[in-house]
Image (cartoon, rainbow, N blue to C red; front, side, top):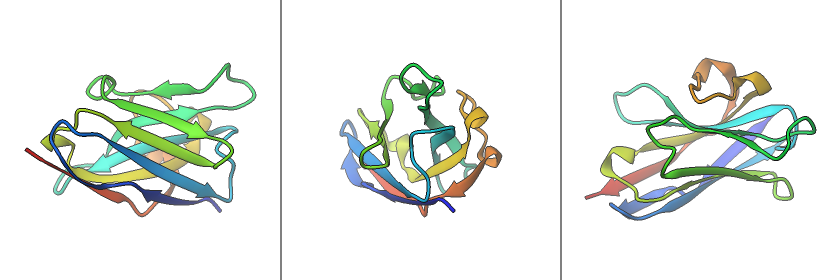
Length: 131
């Protein structure tokens, strides 16, 4: 069973940056798995913001972002540390949310991420952006 532990959230000023980490156990980040980041603000639906997949059938990692964040969010993975990262730059107050890491089947990776395609979730790490 995959276990995911996020870290790196916190309180930052608008315009700042953060790098969130998601360390996985029970499954390698290299393989036929889609690793994604979602966020959920209070009273809002969970929103997919980035996904990554890297395996023997890919030529380097495939990355997916919705248009709303692709200029500011960067997803990456470190196979040696079995960790997936989400770097966010130029943070805005509307980025305030709890950020979750998730693991799903390979076909779950797309620019339109669906939470229902992901079976394993971390506990979330909160991000608060003040203006």
